[in-house]
Length: 343
Ligand code: F6P
Picture (cartoon, rainbow, N blue to C red):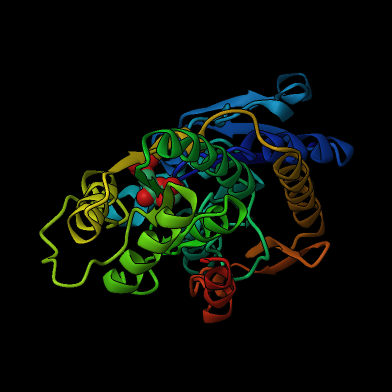
């Protein structure tokens, strides 16, 4: 009898999820797998919401943004009785294995389901934040950062026309990879990251110098930075216990500081969820496809409790538990490289 495999996408969506789903379903077809698409992340497993997913359903989705399965930030380990409901659904749907595509939170749930309840699960890493430590890159990051670089270049045009300083706020909750790569690739004059408090004095000095030379100055900030001297208020949390950062208005506050310290007219722009939509780049299409296909291979080999990782140019299986143990944050070496270009 054909093996029945459930597949779900959890956490924030990002470009590359559809290529990954397609990769898993089409490679799985080589092994005779039948797929069930679990709808809206772990919520679908809790509620038993699943639909058949055939090769014909996924054939053309390689270039599409979002996820055809829907997603949510539901964490069954935070809701009474929800883990048991997941186990019941797994049984009821007669699943042989589960492929979970997600970031640290979704894969953390997958890891616990494997460890504590022996659910045969394989993980596929996704996140535009690129902060999973076990893999060199996650799909979603390349597309999101390409969009942010485009936004920064647009801000340069309007900033220079008005002789203004422009601040671009990008996503990146715990790790500043999106802000860092945007700053380097888009020739910014400063970057503020969650990894270190904002150095207001150095930032404003460089902004003034840059503006004098180039009639504008560009600052990229991650949504989650710490501004020295600012009290952190109580903020709303999502289901995984993360702060809902979009309400913080960090970009605006940094713009205010720059304007008052440098006396240069300053504006801020937030691209927010625009970074998460749209067609995946070539890199994300190929990476998503490869890790999705590899996940089906791991299922075929019975290598459960593993996540697919990109190591150098190879897609390999690594332990899910280790992969979700710690986040990959920006290193001092990367920051040093970025600062080389603030001239
Ligand atoms: O998926 C990670 C992330 O993109 C973070 O960078 C950001 O803080 C968060 O998602 C926003 O999530 P939501 O879609 O729930 O507003």
